[in-house]
Amino acid sequence: MFKDVFCLFLTAHLLGDFYLQTKTLAEKKNKQFCYVVYHALIYALASMLCMLPFCSVILCSVFTGLSVCHFIVDTIKYCIIKTSRFIMKPTIYLV
Image (tube, rainbow, N blue to C red; front, side, top):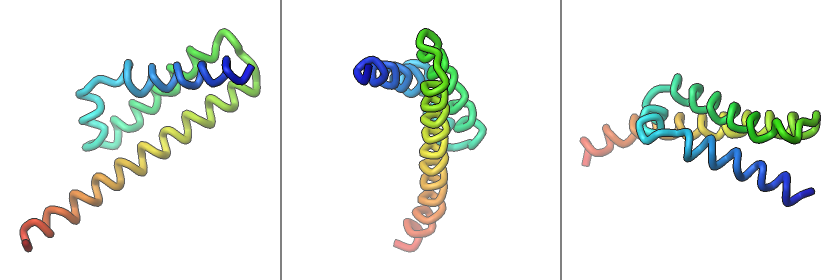
């Protein structure tokens, strides 16, 4: 059972984070927050599609939690990139 669930998680992650995310979307989500949200929705949809054959309340809850965690991680990454750009540009000019 654990192997099956792990394979579902891995498939959902690969679909949502690599296969369904174009290079353009990956670049845009580093610049505009709306693309982070768009990517999170795509990731959640991929998770739901992988979960459908084994539809259960527990799996649904876990996939929802993972989708929310993925969104939080991408949001933190977006904030760090924005902050580092803000800090790095003046630093480069000072050097």
